[in-house]
Image (cartoon, rainbow over all chains, first blue to last red; front, side, top):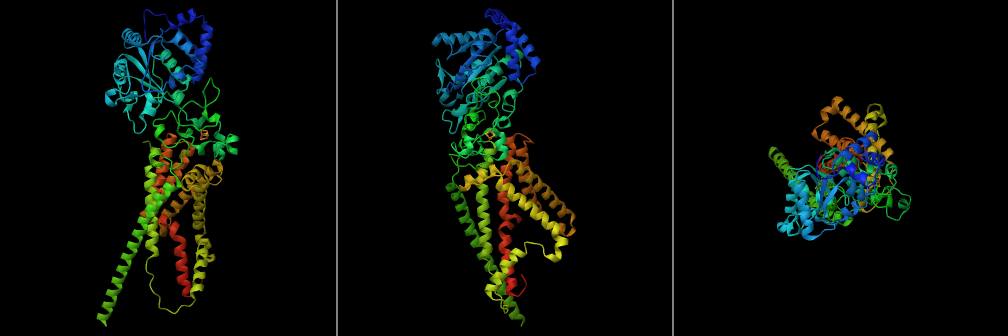
Amino acid sequence: MAHYHDQPTIGEMLERHGVSRRTFIKYCTAMASALALPPLAGRAMAEQLRAALRPSVIYLSFQECTGCLESLIRSFSPSIENLIFDVISLDYDDTLMAAAGAQAEMARDKAMKDNYGKYVLVIDGSVPTGANGAYCALGGKSAVDILREAAKGAAAIVCVGTCSSFGGVPFADPNPTQAWPVSDIVSDKPIVNVSGCPPIPEVITGTLLQFISTGKVPDLDEYRRPKVFFGNTIHDRCYRRPFYDQGKFAKSFDDEGARNGWCLFELGCKGPTTYNACATTKWNGGTSFPIESGHPCLGCSEPNFWDKGSFYSALSAPRWGKAGEVSPGDVLKVVGGAAAVGAALGVASAGLSRLRQRHIEKSTTNNEAKES
Amino acid sequence: MDLVSFARGPALEVALAVFCLGVVWRIVGFALLRIRRNFNEPRNSLVKAIIGGVIATGSRSWPHSEFTVRTGAGEALGYGYHIGLFIVILAFAPHIAFFGSLFGVTWPALPNSVITIFSVLTFTLLLAVLFRRVTHRVLRMLSNFDDYFSWFITTLVIVTGLMATAHIGGPYQTILGLHILSFDALLVWFPFGKLMHAFYIFPSRAINGTLLSRKGAAS
Ligand code: SF4
């Protein structure tokens, strides 16, 4: 766990803001249950957090749309105010901080120097490397250089959003800016990917809290996502699943099936192959999630989700070509072309076989004539 | 490109092309073969012979009463897994979505539980068929690589499909990718192995029946 000598502990900060120990334990218990930890873990988490010094967090935004930060600032539990005033010391975030220009850059450099080896680096957005990194530059420095420099002194890196985790939209074919995910540029630091376009706010804050309270990188899946939030597919936990199992599917956005809340598989739902917590944690303080609003899952927390064909074609549907949605016309082209070649081969092989037959017949007749 | 995208993308495109090329090649090659001229006096007129061929197509699809006891069980197994395969292929919603995007037509699906029951039954029958093939002396001697590979590739598609729906054996998308990939492999193998019987079985019965009926044989 990090130590910052001239800073108050989280417990001291909470007291200063009038948050009682009891309230904080309640809050941590709620967080522990969101993290699928046993109830007693909430108390332990609260005690650990109270004794801990607020870790320095440096939030860098690169090639992104700010949707991830928009999502983060809508976190209900913990709220962003709780998080940045009580639990972390957000030392740099060019969108949220009051300072700008050289002042902001100075704040970042100071935080990196003071907390060298201890700060949590949060990255939002992919990192363009084309044209020597000129596609994304801050204060005259390219994103790729800033990332390399900031990563050196980080205790861990948390990639917020699909762009920093897997490249996201900028990484999509043809990737004009040569954008890369953070893990392709930094290889010597623990990296946690909190993917999603954007990620669920409570998943971002929950991951940060878990790291801060335990000082350890959580259990990760093969894509370095915290298993606690990304351990199940949307389909595993989807409330429309019984309809999938019964074979009841909406065929369009306005048919009887859609009105009855049937499964959206045929409308392109990528829930069966998408790992995320949307169906359980949900959005907007647990109000709903896209499927609940009648829209199929786009699979936004998976790598390359942008290049996996139409959002609206079923997962089992064939896909080839650029647009990724195969029409009966495309099929006819493939089938017709292959059938024409097949027919030509058929005619040729039948012709060959007839020639061979004639040859055999001729030589049999000749032999018979010779014998007689 | 991930496995599912590869399996339902370029791999499927190539497999479909090979399937069509191979099937048309073999059908055209077969249809244009020269039929030896028969100089014998026909016992039946051409029309009667053709009717005999049509009747033979149906009657040879059912065990002859004389052999029911000996061949009935084998035929029942064969019918069983073929019907199972048809139901699983044509009545499972994701498969219908697949055909729908290929051909533009869809039809109602059966509930997944019913499909799962049919899949398990079909798989069991396929195992029984293999057991019969390796334990039956004559069948074993008649079998070659083609028989075993055609069985293997069909069973692989069923097994991976069952694994994908039951969420066992690995992440869903990997198993789904393997399922589609095994189907792609089946499409490629289809025209060049014994699976081609799907296209040959009825025409060959009809032609044999017609030729035999011309000679006066009972259909
Ligand atoms: S709506 Fe999507 S996630 Fe939900 S059951 Fe249907 S396919 Fe699965």
